[in-house]
Image 1: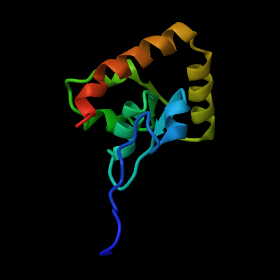
Image 2: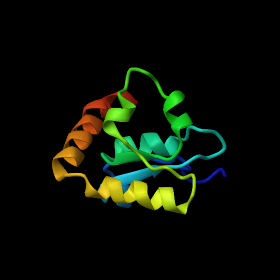
Image 3: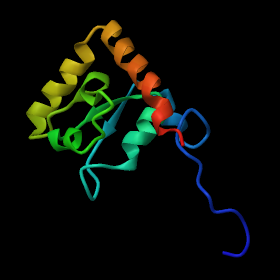
Length: 112
């Protein structure tokens, strides 16, 4: 422990999360609580989040239009999940671009 630097860089478009930064979508799955750092990692990487529980929206800061810049995948069962993903993937590219632009617009709020 006395040798070396054990700090971890922040996710974003750098070397910390390269695959996430190359992805169009990133799942915001529940961790120990409804919220998790992975959502902020997703936003900082410029990736459109996919929320997986309605409760996740409830705990987020209200000054960010989360429902406008994300998608929702219903994880009640396999059938609803597949239907949600099919819906997301069937959206026109212009809708994805609109959400991605919103993600980018709100990135500065999470880059501290």
